[in-house]
Length: 56
Image 1 (cartoon, rainbow, N blue to C red):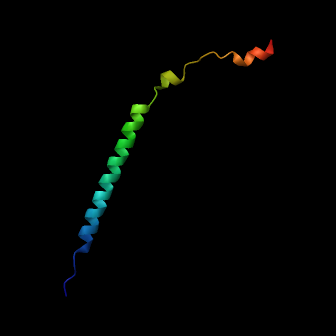
Image 2: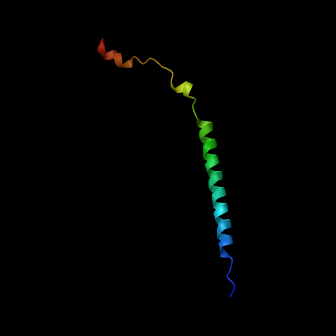
């Protein structure tokens, strides 16, 4: 009796799923990089004196 080679299909399916997962990961990383705000723009000190209005 000869065994069927079903694992090859499962391996191929796993490879396809892994490739799709990696492609989705790369798309998400590319989108995050495109939307990223540079640290220099987020760390600038901007005086906010609104809280002092009630202290005078």
